[in-house]
Length: 454
Length: 145
Image (cartoon, each protein chain N blue to C red):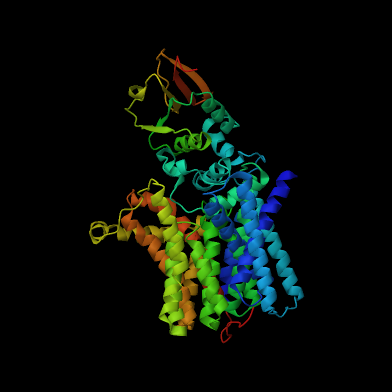
């Protein structure tokens, strides 16, 4: 009972903070699907950042009270600001088909919760992420400084950012203990947030609610999503990262289409959140923000605005890097510093890297026919939407991360084939929702425009 | 039409797989160490591995060196070594990955204990042996209790 109450309290505080951030960032009211997804994505970022910063000064109950107060303060500010603006959104009637699809989605979500609780945290989920949450809990809510320069715990990647571990710590603080079973609760919530965003984005791109629902309901049928390291069930950061990336891409595509201020602010804010989740998030953020900056410049003709879209993410990266230097973290040398000399020396790896990529994409036991569908969808997508900026952006946002993730093995300091085998699949999981968006677009009935408002 | 066919293939291929995954494992105990115990059990061949390791580590004096020795390239024992580090915070854990022709005996000093993971135990009477699991032994000098 105490654990359930603790979980509810932690969840409520995250949602309140997330709703507050959403209301502070936007001027128009958003739909319930978006509200939920954004509340979770921004809420976890707000709570983990608050815990990290406040953890320099406070510990234990004082830290918990302070972060809770921050959550409620953000929520209250957001609520009062929304009252001042007072914008309304038209409520949409729900038809019987929609109710049917919502019911199916609830079954899907239940299966994800079941799978999540049924599986144990995986190697990285336990020894890469949860370990920090545990040590932070034992240290009163802040990751101990000694952990960062402890070479005997280098396997836990102390240089990785803290969104996921400190979100877990937040739940531990509320339930009063570290618990590797109950912490699995949070990963299906990221799944639900990702599916909410996927539904809206697929509806937008295909111009059809039906296609949106089909995409969401087929999503768990790709084995890697639920049955491999990096999927939603094992406690890794890759699937949550994919949820944030999807949300950021969704708002970037919205901004390309309607040029609204809200969409711009949201894709910039969500992009900045990427870098706080995982080091690969920096690459996703760079790809996204570069694309966004080009769009901002072309739409507004303001270089300053385009350039400043990099600031939130860049500030967070700089802050984290400064902290790591300050605390003398032991850096892990999985990659060598990229120079032309290294490229020249390792260029011979390229052929085997791309052949490994091909083998990974065509591994039916892991992916089924998913990447075949994506390949067909890409061809349809390019044939149909050659001149549409949103189409070019979507292709960029899918293919450039895949190319970067593959190309980075040129700089691997380890046995690069082993490195590919242990990490490429997880990297691909990060872009799976974006690949589904291509399929949604390819499913669009010919001649139908994308929807204007969802 | 082609898309209906392709998505049907995905459905037909993916749904049985999802169903079999749902039945794949038993529900774990709702314990605070559910995940680590599940991973340790097939390696140590005993249930409740985390409490056994925690107990063994807790009995060691704070100032002594702790070395985990295991066969090089063995990922399962690497997990056990990481699990010991996970459980023993803030104690530092040292690792020794032994190739087939290597021995750990050179590192033994008066203030060193060694967890021998999946390795043959030497017949040295100056060390006290404690069996933690069928293939995991703790070796410590006789003066360390």
